[in-house]
Image 1 (cartoon, helix red, strand yellow):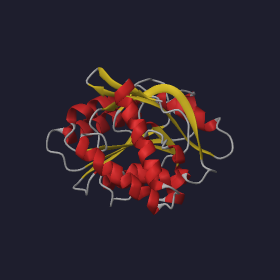
Image 2: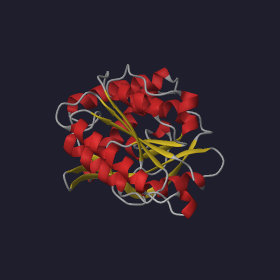
Image 3: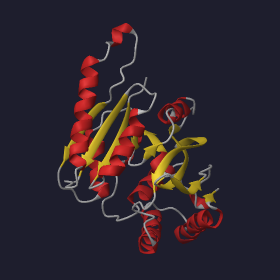
Image 4: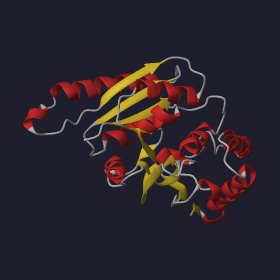
Length: 267
Protein backbone atom coordinates (compact mmCIF):
# COMPACT_ATOMS: atom_id res chain seq x y z
CA UNK A 1 0.00 0.00 0.00
CA UNK A 2 1.29 3.42 -0.96
CA UNK A 3 1.60 5.94 1.84
CA UNK A 4 -0.43 9.10 1.20
CA UNK A 5 0.54 12.47 2.68
CA UNK A 6 -2.21 15.06 3.02
CA UNK A 7 -0.79 18.58 3.38
CA UNK A 8 -2.94 20.98 5.41
CA UNK A 9 -2.04 24.67 5.73
CA UNK A 10 -3.85 26.88 8.23
CA UNK A 11 -4.09 30.41 9.55
CA UNK A 12 -6.99 31.39 11.80
CA UNK A 13 -9.38 28.84 10.28
CA UNK A 14 -10.53 27.01 13.39
CA UNK A 15 -13.98 26.02 12.11
CA UNK A 16 -12.87 25.05 8.60
CA UNK A 17 -9.99 23.00 9.97
CA UNK A 18 -12.39 20.96 12.07
CA UNK A 19 -14.37 20.13 8.92
CA UNK A 20 -11.20 19.22 7.02
CA UNK A 21 -9.94 16.92 9.77
CA UNK A 22 -13.30 15.17 10.11
CA UNK A 23 -13.21 14.47 6.38
CA UNK A 24 -9.73 12.99 6.71
CA UNK A 25 -10.75 10.88 9.70
CA UNK A 26 -13.64 9.45 7.70
CA UNK A 27 -11.40 8.01 4.98
CA UNK A 28 -11.28 4.26 4.49
CA UNK A 29 -7.66 4.37 3.30
CA UNK A 30 -5.25 2.85 5.82
CA UNK A 31 -1.85 4.51 5.38
CA UNK A 32 -2.42 8.24 5.73
CA UNK A 33 -0.01 10.89 6.99
CA UNK A 34 -1.44 14.30 7.92
CA UNK A 35 1.05 17.19 7.77
CA UNK A 36 -0.26 20.48 9.17
CA UNK A 37 1.62 23.76 8.83
CA UNK A 38 0.04 26.66 10.72
CA UNK A 39 1.12 30.26 10.24
CA UNK A 40 0.87 31.25 13.90
CA UNK A 41 -2.90 31.33 14.38
CA UNK A 42 -4.46 33.20 17.31
CA UNK A 43 -8.11 32.06 17.04
CA UNK A 44 -7.85 28.60 18.58
CA UNK A 45 -6.71 26.83 15.42
CA UNK A 46 -3.54 25.63 17.15
CA UNK A 47 -5.62 24.14 19.96
CA UNK A 48 -7.59 22.15 17.37
CA UNK A 49 -4.34 20.90 15.81
CA UNK A 50 -2.79 19.98 19.16
CA UNK A 51 -5.88 18.09 20.29
CA UNK A 52 -6.15 16.27 16.95
CA UNK A 53 -2.51 15.20 17.03
CA UNK A 54 -2.85 13.99 20.63
CA UNK A 55 -6.01 12.05 19.79
CA UNK A 56 -4.32 10.34 16.85
CA UNK A 57 -1.33 9.47 19.01
CA UNK A 58 -3.61 7.90 21.62
CA UNK A 59 -5.43 5.94 18.92
CA UNK A 60 -2.12 4.73 17.48
CA UNK A 61 -0.97 3.55 20.89
CA UNK A 62 -4.18 1.64 21.57
CA UNK A 63 -4.70 0.28 18.03
CA UNK A 64 -4.18 -3.44 17.37
CA UNK A 65 -0.81 -4.33 15.87
CA UNK A 66 -0.39 -4.92 12.17
CA UNK A 67 0.63 -8.48 12.91
CA UNK A 68 -3.04 -9.11 13.74
CA UNK A 69 -3.90 -8.32 10.14
CA UNK A 70 -6.03 -5.27 10.84
CA UNK A 71 -5.26 -1.73 9.63
CA UNK A 72 -4.82 0.95 12.26
CA UNK A 73 -7.45 3.63 12.41
CA UNK A 74 -5.00 6.32 13.58
CA UNK A 75 -3.37 8.81 11.23
CA UNK A 76 0.26 9.78 11.56
CA UNK A 77 0.32 13.52 12.31
CA UNK A 78 3.22 15.96 11.88
CA UNK A 79 2.64 19.65 12.60
CA UNK A 80 4.25 23.00 13.30
CA UNK A 81 2.95 26.48 14.07
CA UNK A 82 5.21 29.41 13.19
CA UNK A 83 5.13 32.59 11.08
CA UNK A 84 5.40 32.04 7.33
CA UNK A 85 5.37 34.04 4.13
CA UNK A 86 1.90 33.05 3.01
CA UNK A 87 0.02 30.05 1.65
CA UNK A 88 2.59 28.81 -0.84
CA UNK A 89 5.46 29.12 1.62
CA UNK A 90 3.40 27.01 4.05
CA UNK A 91 2.71 24.42 1.35
CA UNK A 92 6.43 24.17 0.63
CA UNK A 93 7.14 23.68 4.33
CA UNK A 94 4.54 20.93 4.50
CA UNK A 95 6.08 19.20 1.49
CA UNK A 96 9.49 19.17 3.16
CA UNK A 97 7.94 17.53 6.24
CA UNK A 98 6.00 14.80 4.45
CA UNK A 99 7.16 11.25 3.72
CA UNK A 100 4.37 9.87 1.52
CA UNK A 101 4.63 8.15 -1.85
CA UNK A 102 1.59 10.16 -3.00
CA UNK A 103 1.06 13.78 -1.97
CA UNK A 104 -2.02 16.02 -2.00
CA UNK A 105 -2.83 19.45 -0.60
CA UNK A 106 -5.95 19.05 1.55
CA UNK A 107 -7.28 22.41 2.77
CA UNK A 108 -10.90 21.61 2.01
CA UNK A 109 -13.21 18.63 2.66
CA UNK A 110 -12.93 15.10 1.37
CA UNK A 111 -16.63 14.51 0.82
CA UNK A 112 -16.63 10.74 0.33
CA UNK A 113 -15.15 8.10 2.61
CA UNK A 114 -13.43 6.48 -0.37
CA UNK A 115 -12.06 9.71 -1.89
CA UNK A 116 -8.42 8.89 -1.16
CA UNK A 117 -8.88 5.22 -2.09
CA UNK A 118 -10.47 6.14 -5.43
CA UNK A 119 -7.70 8.53 -6.40
CA UNK A 120 -4.92 6.15 -5.34
CA UNK A 121 -6.54 3.30 -7.26
CA UNK A 122 -6.81 5.52 -10.35
CA UNK A 123 -3.06 6.19 -10.16
CA UNK A 124 -2.31 2.50 -9.72
CA UNK A 125 -4.40 1.64 -12.76
CA UNK A 126 -3.22 4.59 -14.84
CA UNK A 127 -0.48 2.74 -16.65
CA UNK A 128 2.81 4.02 -18.00
CA UNK A 129 3.36 7.76 -17.64
CA UNK A 130 0.58 8.23 -15.08
CA UNK A 131 1.97 10.58 -12.42
CA UNK A 132 -1.21 11.38 -10.54
CA UNK A 133 -5.00 11.55 -10.54
CA UNK A 134 -7.68 14.21 -10.22
CA UNK A 135 -11.44 14.37 -9.76
CA UNK A 136 -14.41 16.72 -9.87
CA UNK A 137 -15.15 19.12 -7.04
CA UNK A 138 -17.83 21.42 -5.73
CA UNK A 139 -17.53 24.91 -4.23
CA UNK A 140 -19.49 25.17 -0.99
CA UNK A 141 -20.65 27.83 1.45
CA UNK A 142 -21.56 25.89 4.56
CA UNK A 143 -23.70 23.02 3.30
CA UNK A 144 -24.82 24.89 0.18
CA UNK A 145 -23.22 23.93 -3.13
CA UNK A 146 -22.36 27.12 -5.02
CA UNK A 147 -20.90 25.55 -8.16
CA UNK A 148 -19.93 22.15 -9.46
CA UNK A 149 -16.66 21.92 -11.34
CA UNK A 150 -16.64 19.04 -13.83
CA UNK A 151 -12.94 18.84 -14.62
CA UNK A 152 -12.96 16.42 -17.52
CA UNK A 153 -9.76 15.84 -19.44
CA UNK A 154 -7.90 18.14 -21.78
CA UNK A 155 -4.66 19.96 -22.45
CA UNK A 156 -3.01 23.18 -21.38
CA UNK A 157 -3.38 24.58 -24.90
CA UNK A 158 -7.18 24.32 -24.60
CA UNK A 159 -7.17 26.35 -21.40
CA UNK A 160 -7.82 23.21 -19.36
CA UNK A 161 -6.20 22.48 -16.02
CA UNK A 162 -7.15 20.04 -13.24
CA UNK A 163 -8.48 21.45 -9.99
CA UNK A 164 -5.54 21.66 -7.61
CA UNK A 165 -7.64 20.79 -4.50
CA UNK A 166 -8.59 17.48 -6.15
CA UNK A 167 -5.11 16.57 -7.38
CA UNK A 168 -3.08 13.66 -6.01
CA UNK A 169 0.51 13.35 -7.30
CA UNK A 170 3.32 10.87 -7.02
CA UNK A 171 6.14 12.14 -4.86
CA UNK A 172 8.53 11.97 -7.82
CA UNK A 173 6.81 14.95 -9.47
CA UNK A 174 7.75 17.26 -6.61
CA UNK A 175 11.24 15.79 -6.51
CA UNK A 176 11.74 16.33 -10.25
CA UNK A 177 9.98 19.67 -10.82
CA UNK A 178 10.27 21.38 -7.43
CA UNK A 179 7.62 22.98 -5.23
CA UNK A 180 5.55 26.16 -5.36
CA UNK A 181 7.05 29.46 -6.55
CA UNK A 182 6.37 31.94 -3.75
CA UNK A 183 6.82 34.89 -6.11
CA UNK A 184 3.21 34.25 -7.17
CA UNK A 185 0.41 35.70 -5.07
CA UNK A 186 -2.55 33.69 -6.42
CA UNK A 187 -1.38 31.30 -9.12
CA UNK A 188 1.61 29.37 -7.78
CA UNK A 189 -0.48 26.19 -7.89
CA UNK A 190 -1.32 26.86 -11.56
CA UNK A 191 2.34 27.56 -12.40
CA UNK A 192 3.36 24.34 -10.63
CA UNK A 193 0.85 22.32 -12.67
CA UNK A 194 1.94 23.98 -15.92
CA UNK A 195 5.52 23.10 -15.04
CA UNK A 196 4.96 19.35 -15.13
CA UNK A 197 1.94 19.06 -17.42
CA UNK A 198 3.63 20.85 -20.32
CA UNK A 199 5.53 17.57 -20.75
CA UNK A 200 3.00 15.35 -22.54
CA UNK A 201 4.69 12.26 -21.10
CA UNK A 202 3.21 13.16 -17.71
CA UNK A 203 -0.38 11.95 -17.65
CA UNK A 204 -3.13 12.26 -15.05
CA UNK A 205 -5.85 9.70 -14.44
CA UNK A 206 -9.33 11.18 -14.09
CA UNK A 207 -12.06 10.10 -11.67
CA UNK A 208 -15.31 11.63 -13.02
CA UNK A 209 -16.98 12.02 -9.64
CA UNK A 210 -17.17 14.77 -7.02
CA UNK A 211 -14.67 13.82 -4.30
CA UNK A 212 -13.74 17.24 -2.89
CA UNK A 213 -15.87 20.04 -1.43
CA UNK A 214 -13.87 23.27 -1.69
CA UNK A 215 -14.57 26.14 0.68
CA UNK A 216 -15.69 29.06 -1.46
CA UNK A 217 -13.39 32.07 -1.42
CA UNK A 218 -9.94 30.52 -1.87
CA UNK A 219 -6.84 32.45 -2.88
CA UNK A 220 -7.62 32.49 -6.60
CA UNK A 221 -11.43 32.86 -6.49
CA UNK A 222 -12.05 35.35 -3.66
CA UNK A 223 -13.39 38.20 -5.76
CA UNK A 224 -12.73 40.09 -8.98
CA UNK A 225 -9.48 41.75 -7.91
CA UNK A 226 -7.94 38.42 -6.95
CA UNK A 227 -9.12 36.88 -10.21
CA UNK A 228 -7.46 39.67 -12.20
CA UNK A 229 -4.22 38.94 -10.34
CA UNK A 230 -4.71 35.25 -11.09
CA UNK A 231 -5.27 36.07 -14.80
CA UNK A 232 -2.02 38.03 -15.01
CA UNK A 233 -0.10 35.44 -13.04
CA UNK A 234 -1.48 32.61 -15.17
CA UNK A 235 -0.22 34.36 -18.30
CA UNK A 236 3.12 34.90 -16.60
CA UNK A 237 3.30 31.21 -15.61
CA UNK A 238 2.78 30.10 -19.21
CA UNK A 239 5.47 32.46 -20.46
CA UNK A 240 7.88 31.39 -17.75
CA UNK A 241 7.45 27.77 -18.82
CA UNK A 242 7.76 28.63 -22.51
CA UNK A 243 4.31 27.39 -23.44
CA UNK A 244 3.28 28.59 -26.90
CA UNK A 245 0.46 31.17 -27.26
CA UNK A 246 0.21 32.12 -23.57
CA UNK A 247 -2.31 34.95 -24.06
CA UNK A 248 -4.69 32.80 -26.13
CA UNK A 249 -4.50 30.00 -23.57
CA UNK A 250 -5.20 32.45 -20.74
CA UNK A 251 -8.30 33.73 -22.58
CA UNK A 252 -9.50 30.15 -23.13
CA UNK A 253 -8.93 29.38 -19.44
CA UNK A 254 -10.91 32.50 -18.47
CA UNK A 255 -13.82 31.48 -20.70
CA UNK A 256 -13.90 28.08 -19.02
CA UNK A 257 -14.13 29.75 -15.63
CA UNK A 258 -16.88 32.12 -16.80
CA UNK A 259 -18.91 29.14 -18.00
CA UNK A 260 -18.95 27.92 -14.40
CA UNK A 261 -20.90 31.02 -13.39
CA UNK A 262 -23.11 30.86 -16.48
CA UNK A 263 -24.13 27.22 -16.14
CA UNK A 264 -23.24 26.52 -12.54
CA UNK A 265 -20.48 24.16 -13.67
CA UNK A 266 -17.36 23.81 -15.76
CA UNK A 267 -17.18 21.13 -18.44
